[in-house]
Image (cartoon, rainbow, N blue to C red):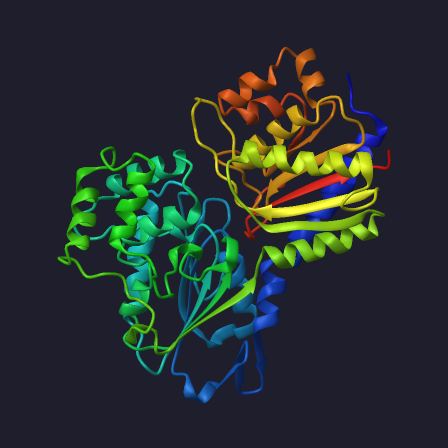
Length: 448
């Protein structure tokens, strides 16, 4: 069985809608809205600073989009940037003139990331009250800046990260733990700045745009505690599995033997401004507009989708089927849009990511249905440890797979969605988009 002409058209439309969403949160577009240079005045959001009041500008950053964000900031500020350093994922770098770019491992931190985080802390510690630190933060910053706290090794952090990523914990829970094993996260970067004003431009990859969770909140007050860390690890049955030094640190923190991360109202944040410059809501709005241009009635279901990927797929497909059958809650042809960050509890030995897993479960739910297509993809162009952003699924997916001897339930059970979709030519390969605002799900439903 092959894809019909109608399915091909739906795929083309879904890709155009996805690309429109990506374009709305491109670093260049986001930075241009928040950095303006007019004569001798620097405007950052609503804050205006005369250049004569700034001794030096340090341009720093971390995250998958940080190099692209810094490149645009450099283009606007030029030689006014005194020094800088941004840390990004391998393959996500950019050519910068005033700043160094260091690449590191994601989602599991590596030695390059530790070296880069140390270099970033050194750079910030050289600033003073008359300087300005301009910080570019995007999703991925947590893994890219491992600065193990005293008594913790990089290997301890790597093992803890692997266990958290595989247990089904959400990003709020994962980053709560990360912050308490670090010297840089949870607002601790601000402790090194010697009172220098910090303005962070932040591309959000977190549901609710929580400043203390995006990139583990390097420049934001931390609401989490050591006790929260233990509760999270106990919740997922990891407390007895994590390295002993991690247990010891969390226990010492609960007992008050280790200083907590800085909280709201702490003096470290007196000269700190955090600005969200782009988010999933921006991407969904642009996708909604493009869907209408493509002739579909758009409906945004939610920008806060979370939960087990395969369960989310069932719910989204149920809505699509209702639209197909009864024109509720929107009339066909329709485009259902959602986004967020699902999780996957790893039980198998396969290769994949949360978007491909969601699409695989959707393919099973849509089996035999005509006129419905789903695309689930990460806005950063990467889904799990793969070269794919996500995958397409429709009513023919499982039947086409069976012709090739591929059993959808078996591949789902092994968390092997990548090797399921690759022979079907149903992967979405975009390469690094150099932005990151979580995931998009696009469900196109034709008229019955």
